[in-house]
Image 1 (cartoon, rainbow, N blue to C red):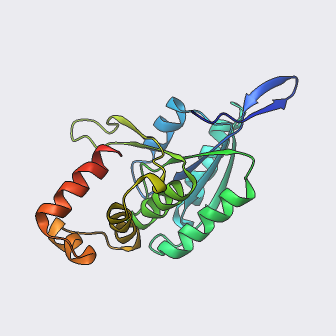
Image 2 (tube, rainbow, N blue to C red):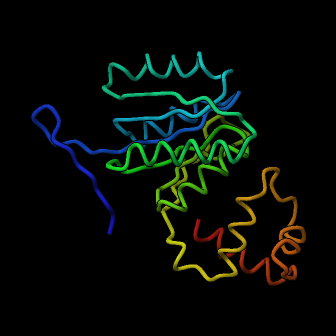
Length: 195
């Protein structure tokens, strides 16, 4: 059953959805695309000092639409710091439904948001890259409760989340979780299918 959090606001009911979105050095129009397709009354942008002006443009652009936008500055490659700040945002907004918009930003930023989503059962949105056009397909990854995943698959997800630089091959991932290529391939295929 989908959780829906509502609030009485100015004589009407409104959804209490906070979208946490990552900004990058390019292609931030994808953030706009997700926000347009999956609107939220409150948005927290995560980015670096370099994104400050872009965050201000977002805030100005969406102000008239009644969307409250704030900005948090992070070290783009410090996974632990990013995850801590994202979890702090979630704790501070405990009465809001959280979604993630991770079409931009560094691998560390996107991985930290994926981990926070997994820990909180939040939905993740992103726009795929498409060689022919700047905006690809909108993808929605529904929350998958970790308790429903086998210990082996949980271990794989944890190793992926711990890796700041990512994993280059199934062989490398398999060695981290002590599985052969055939076995890790089956688990990864299942995890991809489940989002």
